[in-house]
Amino acid sequence: MGKAKSNGDKSVARVNRKIPKDVYEAELFRLQTELVSLQEWVKATGARVVVVFEGRDAAGKGGTIKRITEYLSPRIARIAALPAPTERERGQWYFQRYVEHLPARGEIVLFDRSWYNRAGVEVVMGFCTPDEHELFLRQCPIFEQMLIDDGIIVRKYWFSVSDDEQLRRFKSRRKDPLRRWKLSPMDLESVYRWEDYSRAKDQMMARTDTPNSPWFVVESDNKKHARLNMMSHLLKSIDYEQVRHPKVELPKRPPMGDYERPARELATYVDDHVSTLLGDGGKGS
Image 1 (cartoon, rainbow, N blue to C red):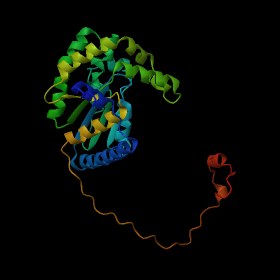
Image 2 (spheres, rainbow, N blue to C red):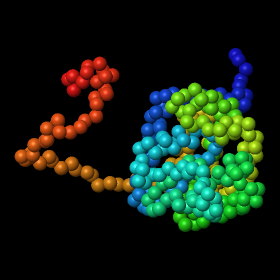
Image 3 (cartoon, rainbow, N blue to C red):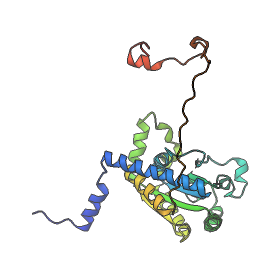
Image 4 (cartoon, rainbow, N blue to C red):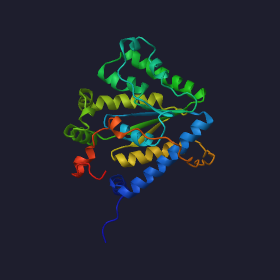
């Protein structure tokens, strides 16, 4: 008999295991179905939900947001991914431009990066002063408590990726013409400033992880696991209910009158590109 595995060995094996594709796809669809139910509850009750996605570059935030919103209505579930502030916005109260994107009644807003930029990239790259950084760390818990006091449901997720995995993803993006646009000089700079970002993140967590607005850490070296774990946690953390909808009866088609469709030649159709793939020249379509 081989030696019994230590707890450490079991932990490594647990982290390294991969979910089978069919199990992943089935559970992803189940969670997406529940997210639709959450959306309908938000719409029916007028609830307001804010979900903050933070983490290092290439940590898997965007992919998770994409799966969350895949079947949701863009009228109810919005993504807020703000660009760099304008000169005018730099002269505003720091939180002001984010307030514009907060949800109204019956809305969900997913912040693909958020006001926490000041606690990460801005302080590490020198885009804010030490005094501005300190002011943010003092004001942020107060700001979030104001949102919660007003009835907004706030959830904050930090996607945690290892330095080796982040570098591997950067290299993969560099070779992929469909994802190369995701690589920016700022992303590459983060490789050399790993420890600076780590210190900034630790300070951010220490000052903004509060009982009423805690941080939830998502291990994201495995993207599929991260997506399922985060989506499951979000759903479990909100006390929503199934909303009953009246049964929809499709009307019977009325009898045709004397309408005649205009001749096909009078309209301009797009080229039949598919026929060039099938090699049939469009015949038989």
